[in-house]
Structure formats: structure tokens, C-alpha cells
Image (tube, rainbow, N blue to C red; front, side, top):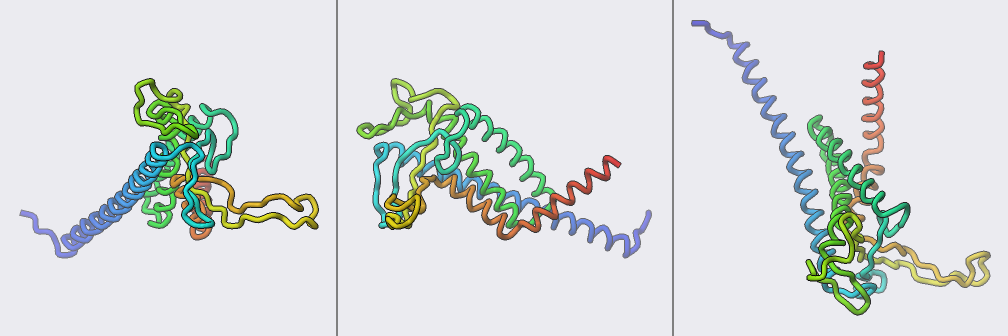
Length: 237
């Protein structure tokens, strides 16, 4: 019977411990990403459904002088921006989400920094949250008006078809609400509000993820990009 040396046994034990540690790190980062994604999605959809079914369209609830719950809907991108067609925007979101999922799985497997993974998870969750509105809300809810509350799965059907739902927005922060002095050129006497866009929890998740990436991981992103380009150049060579 072959007897292994103490060095060989020690190496095998070390290798096993190393693999277990790496697996634990991978699993914990993956679980964290899943937790963030589902938490954002649940909070986002609960808020949207409550606003959609409990508030009239353009109804406003004052929380403070600079914070209102203001129910509105939009067909476009984040913060109510409306560009291109509705089907194009929904399709674009789905493609973008598929790419982010692929990238997120890749960076988790490669053991990227936890904070970087958290930021990407927030961006992904926010994008998925708004896709749910665009794909399903037109079928699952009837039209919200200034005099009619929307209901879930109405007998007469929804207000639109699949992929043509409107994104529900509700957070409004008019932090500065004033009028420009009359002596100012071009804008004198005009009403000015900062911050005027109305957004939802999914938009906030996307924005926070992007801002955190730019503030804390811009150097890390550049290094990752240069590393990918270097690998691509080696393959071409």
C-alpha cells in the first residue's frame, strides 16, 4: 500500500481548503446579488401597485414641502423621459437586462469586489422593475384617470396589450420651488423647480448604482476594461 508523504497530504488539504474558501466567497457574493435584486424588485412593485390601485392619476400626497407622492405614468426611459417608440424601448430594456445578467454572472464567478457586484445588482434590479411595468401593466390593470382608480385584472381587460404598459412613477422632490428674478436675461420671471423629474424606486436603484460605480469604482472599471482589451489583443495576435 502506497503511503503519501506529509508534504503531499498537506498540499491536498491546503488545496481542498482553498477550493472551499473560493466556493464560499462565490456563493456569498452570488447570494448577495440575488438578495439585492429580489429586495429591490419586491419593494418597487409593492410601491407601484399600491400607488396604481389606491391613487388617482395625478393625485398628490404632500409629505413635506420638498417631498410629494405624485402619481403619474410614462412611456419612456427613467425619470419620465420619452424618446423613440414604446416597443423599441421595451425591447431595448430586455436586451440590456440580458447583457447585464450575463456580465453580473461573469464578474461573480471571477470574484470581483463585493461593492462592484452590489452596484451592478442594483442597476439590474431597477431595469427589471421597469420592464415588469412595460410588459405586464397594460394587461393586468385598467386605465388610471383623475376620477377612476385602477383595478388588478379588470373584467373588461387592461388598458393596453403586452409590452405596451406604462411605467408608474411617484417620487417628486421639488427641493427648490421659486421664480427667477425679473432682471435675469432669458429666464427672468419664469417658474423654476429643482428637482422636477418624477421617478420610482427602480429609477432610484439604477441611479444609485451608477453614481456609486462612478464615485467608487471608476478606476476599477477602467482596469477591468483594459484587462479585457489586453486579452482580446492577445487572442488576435
